[in-house]
Each structure stands twice: as C-alpha cells, then as structure tokens.
Length: 288
Image 1 (cartoon, rainbow, N blue to C red):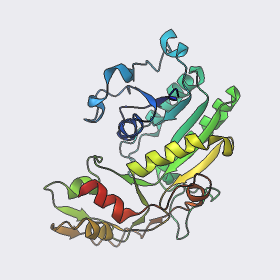
Image 2 (image 1 turned 180 degrees about the horizontal axis):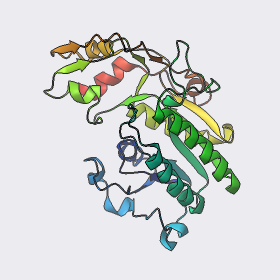
Image 3 (image 1 turned 90 degrees about the horizontal axis):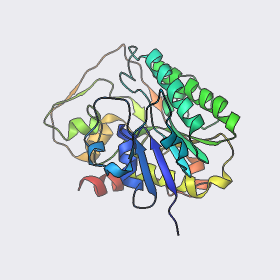
C-alpha cells in the first residue's frame, strides 16, 4: 500500500523535528525549512531529500505542484512565549506569510498544532468547548491564529483539525525546559512549585497525530482536540518521578499566584481510541 504523503510545515522547529522522526517510518514525510537562521540539532540529521526549501514571501512552481495528503502546521514564534516580551507583531507577520503558503499548497487535510495557552488558567479541567480566556500575549496570539486559519482556509474548503497541545517532553527536550535542566549539571530553581500542569510525551503526541489521520472521517470540519493526559502534576512531583538527586532551590515568591492548566482528554479516549497516558511508564521507557 502506498504511504500517505505528509508535509510538516515548520520542520526545523522543536516540535516539527521531533514529529518527523516519530512519523517517518509510517508515512512518506517531508519537512519545510523554517526561515530561522539557526536550526536545532535534531533537524540537522533529517534526510536532505525530505527537506522542502520554501520562500514564504514567494510561492514557487515547485512547491505549488507538489501534492500532499496531510499537512501538519508546526510553524510559529515561541521566543519569550511565557513573558510579557512576546513579540505579537513578529508572529502576526509570520502568520500572514504561512497562511498564503497554505492557501496555495495542494493538500486535503490540515492538522494545526496550537497551544493550551489559549485557555488561560482554571481550577476546572479544560474541555474543547471551554471558554478561552488567555492570560498571556502568547495565548492571545494562538487563539487569534486559530481563528485566522479557520477563516482563510475555509475559503478553499479545507478540512482543518486543531490540536491544542499542553506540556510535552521526549528524549530530546527544549533547551531551558525542566527536563533539560534535570539532565544537565545545572542546579534546579523552581519559581512556582505549586504550578499544576498536564504533561504528555512526544511519542504519545505522535500517536495522537496517527490516530487523527486514521479517524479523520469521524472528525468534524474545524474539529478541536485537546492533546493531554487529563491528570495534574507539579514540578516537585516530576522531579521525584525522575529520581534526580540534585540541589533544588525553591523561590517562594508571594507575588506568583497558583496556576493550573489541566485538559479534558475524553476525545482522545473515545473518538481517537487512544489508551490513557501513563507518565511513569513513559518516563521509564525513555530515560531508563
């Protein structure tokens, strides 16, 4: 059977690069090279024949003539995404460029990787129908980005599936993340020990992608799916699971409010027929 042809837009991003390696054995996967000058180490190992060079300012005939079954959009600006310094103008300029690219590209289904930051924080679990009240510039941007993608790509009658990704980890982790710090010689500084978050692995996320592709006919147009475990953890719980005997410094800052962002994962279990994510087992498989 002929393999489905998939293009990962934003292939040199952290998520895009990881997804390539997790999907390449099952599908015929291509990636686009981002406009960034620096590329992460994972991207540098990707087969050069599978890298599609694009100019977002000008769509060339080569890319326009290529046909794909699925496009996975991972492109975005995540620099300072937790900070008030997040550059929305830069992000909006990038969206305009890749929306034009996605409108011209020949494909059937778009899977857009969004963020749980569109929800904000709440003591209740976030379902896909929950009210979005982002409390960061990045969250505001990601919510507006979803709306723009649905508005402009629906003109071409594309089927759009939005995956709202919560926290994620894998064998290779983003520089500066808690997993990265734990595996380095750096001391651990926890600024918000009471922060409760929802965590899945890259491997589990790739299974979500695969199941989304498999059951796409059951999904509605403009479907939104939470990519999460449905369970809460905090930084200290994670450190204990990893059993890292390190010097942990906890900054007790009274100005930092307790934050909570946990997702409802019922769509993953019922519609996509995925098993419940097991954090301890996944960590053991990756790091033991």
